[in-house]
Picture 1 (cartoon, rainbow, N blue to C red):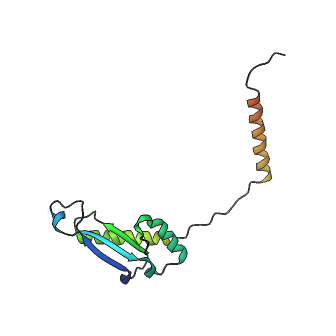
Picture 2: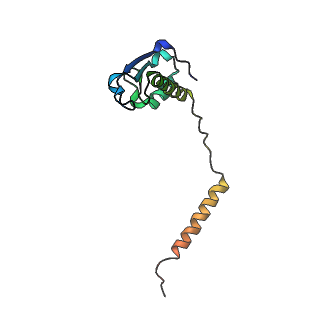
Picture 3: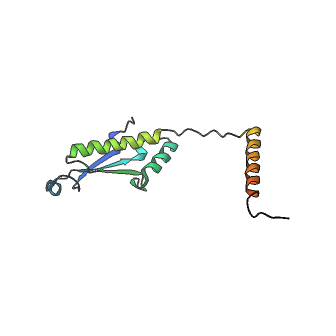
Length: 132
């Protein structure tokens, strides 16, 4: 789990849509979390992965904006937003495994060519029958 400093996070509560009935119009329950990505101190490759994963949630100023409005209470939406932020940062910190190139053996290449020739001869045998 990523350790995100509180100084990098700004919270704002808005009137949101979703469950809550008439309460939605009166109470600001939706949570907008803004995170200064540069304050997280990520490695350059982790920052690139985070930028790719975040997509449109990342602003040009380097802020990550997460909006949580699934629940009826501020606390639940706040916890949801923070959980989603942690998931995103954790996913960005995972380094993808490098693919190791492999080459087919000489025997495998020869088998491939033999099967191609066999298929070619089968297909050549099809077509019009000529009586010469």
